[in-house]
Amino acid sequence: DWTASNVVDDQVAAIREQVGEDRVLCALSGGVDSSVAAALVQRAVGDQLTCVFVDHGLLRQGEAEQVEQEFVAATGVDLVVVDAKEQFLGALAGVTEPEAKRKIIGREFIRVFEQAARDVVEDRGDAEHPVKWLVQGTLYPDVVESGGGSGAANIKSHHNVGGLPDDLQFSLVEPLRALFKDEVRQVGRELGVPDPIVDRQPFPGPGLGIRIIGEVTETNLDILRRADAIAREELTQAGLDKEIWQCPVVLLADVRSVGVQGDGRTYGHPVVLRPVSSEDAMTADWTRVPYDVLAQISTRITNEVEEVNRVVLDVTSKPPGTIEWE
Ligand code: XMP
Image 1 (cartoon, rainbow, N blue to C red):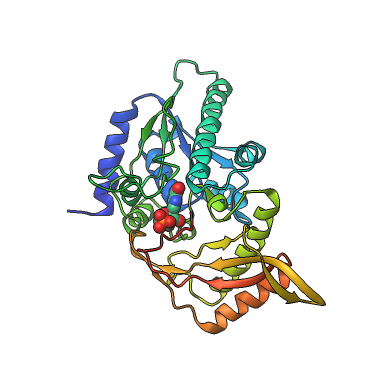
Image 2 (image 1 turned 30 degrees about the vertical axis):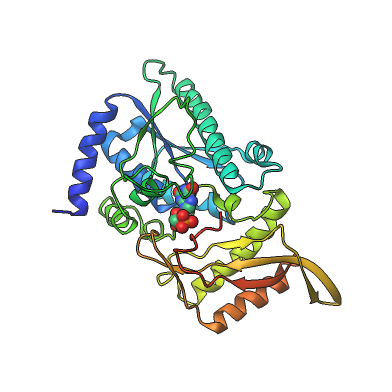
């Protein structure tokens, strides 16, 4: 029988057997998947676990603070925050091709973790137990879509599956590998992970880096972050958070169009709203967001984000479109 409590029991036993006395590192992003994966591993091996939160500079507004406050307050987990903004932006400079971005982001992640692993051992003065294991919140759809499932095509390199380097120094602990998102949420509730985290909409590991069509620069990130914050605020205010699976906001940094804002002609960038409804992210439909909510988002973004002079709505299902644009 599939029950959340059976999954917890089975995984706790499996994790204990897998990692033994070794030290474990978890890549915590603040999203549902990594949070539930971390809570499971903590249940299994307690303080053998250290969570590492990488601020790669590709986060949305307020996200770093949320992880530090909400998750740590709820679980008391041992957390290390690494500021790696410059490292990631440096590595991404000049890169526009989606798979190249994904591979670079995945690679830099692993580098940061390898350094964090050495630091954790050093800080604890416990050379007997080096970090051997890395926890990742990989779900079943991630495995399938990265070509890991039998006969599946490689659609995208999800950074937590396909983009790992060949010389990886850790072995992976992936306790959610057989689960779909709704199952992960049930397991999270079973473990006492708080609702605001369990109910959080999905956000990709590579973050805003794959929502900028064009180069990932500080300037483009800043534009996208402001537009995204407005869209999220308005959708939440309209009570649509449950109905919408997630709503990527995408900056078309390589595209410009003519507009008229304030006193004159502008030549700005469009942003795309991509609200989707889905059960498991394998397929999705575009969400019929009420026109007045769309109008409010459009008005606010074009008023408050001066670099953006056009807001467009993506009305493509998956397939043929994927949820993210890259
Ligand atoms: P796509 O764009 O493939 O997205 O339809 C399906 C779901 O996966 C999320 N996504 C990712 N999540 N690492 C992640 O952890 C990734 O590299 C990644 N790429 C896409 C996406 O937001 C959607 O929920």
